[in-house]
Image (cartoon, rainbow, N blue to C red; front, side):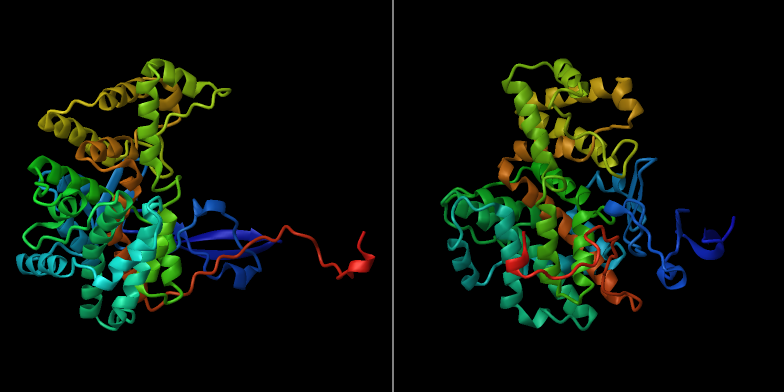
Length: 429
């Protein structure tokens, strides 16, 4: 197979290198294209543009494959442990028993926020979007931990990563408690990562929230399945901001802002709203699918299709099973799950969706699981951010260690007015 591509411009032939990844994906290297030819490429949305070389996550959208550091995500499902996966993504390998214990202890040690930060929550109105608070507070962490702004070695980075992953739970829980006017719950050093978060969210004075094993495993898996997804919008944002040598806190705060968008982190909210609309409106799933296929209708089938996957989203397959087991174990049947299952069944047998390769994605079932656990809808995207944080940290550090990394600076094709002269106010018509 050729190791170069031939490009002919204005009768001149140019040879461009072809790179191949470890899984066989191939790319034309155009790093010197403008210098050699005077041309750039145009790719709105970057759907055909590789922005970096990365060893963190592999996706094959045609085959429905997702792997973290080479490990298929299905292998994390039997004993889901978000802390273990966070270490894997950030440091490139599964932790030893000693490394895991030390990291878990750090997450417990760093869970508290500086008391001064608590006053910042009071400055937000009760109705403030939790994602706005999350982004602001992650940025504020850099003020309270200035020693971690410049990360000069691996140990400093490990401390910064542990602080962020630990404290994001506390920030999220405090944002929720502030919104409902309840007192803040301090982290419990005797609880593990997920149960501690649910304690901070839902415990009341003299009535601590006890985390059921099925809930713990379900939420661990939800976080794991959101932990990284290659060069998506928020991860690319973290890398772009980080390319300017911005610190880890600022870069991850920018990732939160990107994730806030309804086309990215808010999609599972749209799915739940759709299921509620069907349930409350007494619309049959069959009728809803019919309306979704009607071009004149404003109805859309949410939670189907993906920018990358042209097959089943492997995360959706895992979460569908988790939703069934969780609701059954809790003894809380949810009509929305029945509607979701019927919509999936109809769509997967309908040529309209099959021909367009519209399969359920990760957002289709994650909202049902979060709802069953008791997470309010306005916190769904925050849960996504908690899960995605290890991926953001891993990408920020990978880029920081790359000696060949450059500040991100896309080009454009200018479509405005040609050169013209300034006209004084008196002469303007």
